[in-house]
Length: 278
Image (cartoon, rainbow, N blue to C red; front, side, top):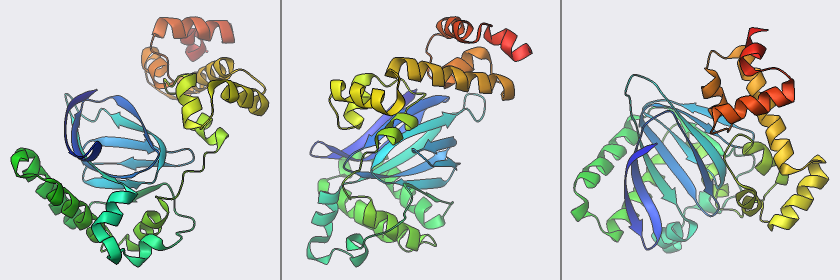
């Protein structure tokens, strides 16, 4: 769960935030008109996009294009907390920052850039994060002009690291309109608690259109398809994972382990514990 959150806004937009998270915790993020730089001060994290997955450890960071993600915060030591810093990039704010001096790479067409760009530990980025921590400790010093300068500073620092080419390609494409692929939305949210209403929104469809499209693509109802896929994934984890049955139920998207066990037995004609034993 999120233990604490501090943030600095410009208008109604969250620009920079600091979060303390108690793992294990799964968070769903959808960046429709923004990109996000995430620095993991401490902890172990999995960032998941539709067809990509990156493991991020302490002092590492990622740059995420607009899109939908699952972020898994893993328990890494007894009573350990994860600390992260997130910096949000909005196209209109970047354009305000650079005005008539927009860097050439922002106007380029970066082809083939992945949605998740991981950055290994880098002293320049660590120093930047330390400067943010000072402002979180002294929020009375912060104003909109300072926040804009910090965003500009981060962009300029990123393109001077050894990841410059990848960062340039990613920044160049991350503000393009999001092209929604129906199956990508479904497959990337199989094990989350998303409702039909939310999935329809992510697909840019009404609920009725979403259900019709789902039936056409999968030849099944959303409820039945999601249940079947979650149970199949649970069966795989029972074979290969040492996790408890309750943890597996939670991992595949069931909030009630007893309900999960009933559905599992109905589907496989055997209880989860018996399945694991056999």
